[in-house]
Image (cartoon, rainbow, N blue to C red; front, side, top):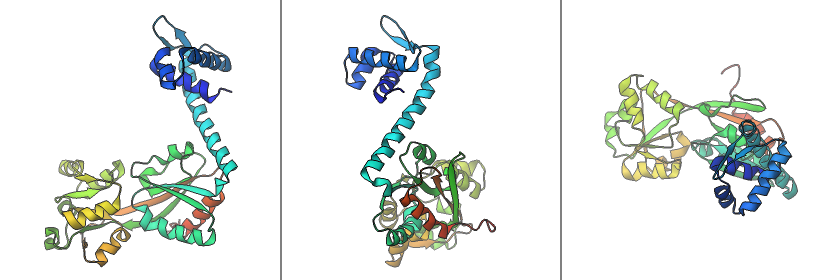
Length: 305
């Protein structure tokens, strides 16, 4: 079995083609790096590098070994993290990755119920519209992902739960001129300064289709948003104080609407937000199972989906 140190040396040398630069990156001497590479080749049972006077490069065997080494690195990292969780008793901790619309719309109520039944569980929430859930779950960085359907992985050893679709609400401050138009089209919504989280390809395709699917629709969506942030508190403040139009689910704007700082912009063709939850089916922890079972209260009825 290759060690983490010999793997690190292999990756640095494969990337730099220079013993000196690879040693500098690792913070070790050239002699130490040479020893680590020798260990890697001994452990692999093959010559991984052609050595030259001023540089080196991967052999054919080294090139074929590289993707295997990447997979081994990932598995070693996962093993180390799981071992640390076992030692520290943190198997009762759940790390959830989610999109920006999820915390208020879903996770807050689920978390409240789980903590009533399991007050000793710990939770870590990672909110981002750019998250790559499958890769992060495979690397052991998160235990579960909750977000829209564009993130649904097609892979073995994962379980997917479909959550009910939710309408998207657009809001602006009460004195915004868009309210003078009454019920508006999406094209009219996006003719004003618009702020939102990262609009990934699924959302962009949805908006282009909703706007007519032509070249003009494509141009409109390519220009969105004028301000991009995954922090919905900040986006709501922009809408209330700086005249931006913002879209989300109703819970996101609940307080500001109640205070009269934001007002719904009714649209003729509402769009919906599709939510799913994804988890790995292996090594399910107590915290993960408790959270997952609570999510089932929001699961789409398969017969009605």
